[in-house]
Image (cartoon, rainbow, N blue to C red):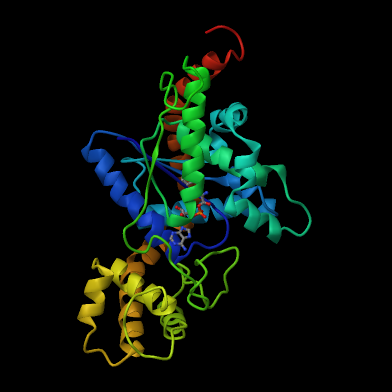
Length: 344
Ligand code: TYM
């Protein structure tokens, strides 16, 4: 039961990243350990080069993200934590997987459509191939489970198709999906039951996001308590003052989900517990208190860890060595199955 996930080093990480993904990495690390398996996490610096970026900043943003993951509870002694650019097997596998990836499928990716529309100067070929690199990340490790937020569903489905198509084409099958030897494991996406898609506080019909959201609508994991409280108090709701979840109440539903996720309750329980509340004010205050309590200890550990970049590099070097020891043999099998390079 091998667990794998990746996270971009771009921008400042937000509450959606934490509730949709990072905190499930930490439970994944525990589950994998209990099962005697690996939990593998990657900071995907190569993915960050697919849109306009500043090369002087990328390494710093990678350190930020690694420090945040460590602060949230990942432990390099209990999991494999590495930087994508340190493992050259993955970009090589990306190229090999393009042989079984349909151009039409890549063209249908929501993220490609959204992000290509945002680019001012250049829509890079890398942005188009982004999902193949993501597939290579997971498939290079023969991972079984991939904890991600709801926005990654389409990428995960494509990754599964790529693995199935690879096995059918190069695993000695007859070309139909499901036939052939499992050269590549077909992974499964694992999505949170609550807060799988945290919405922007100012525009609750849009997901919370570093690339397209507003600063006021995005709760950054390093925002101080005052800022968190202010942003939540100003969150867009509606005028009927009724605490209830449903598609007609996106702002209130988002707050209820945030409170549920941060206090380990279901959204229904939260609504019931707030039956005597005096309107949305109580919901917002309770949510702010819960978010501040959850993030406080993470922020303290982050402050301790972030300044020691040598220690971060050392942890990443250990992670890269462990990652390459797994990905190398998988890549060798893929090359052999595809007839690339000399006979094994
Ligand atoms: P990234 O860096 O955009 O986001 C990291 C994780 O956070 C989740 N997430 C959210 N969850 C709930 N609500 C939100 N508003 C929200 N916004 C983001 C994402 O679903 C993700 O799990 N393509 C990936 C990175 C990646 C990857 C991989 C993931 C590269 N290779 C291999 C898994 C496996 C991404 O851009 O994540």
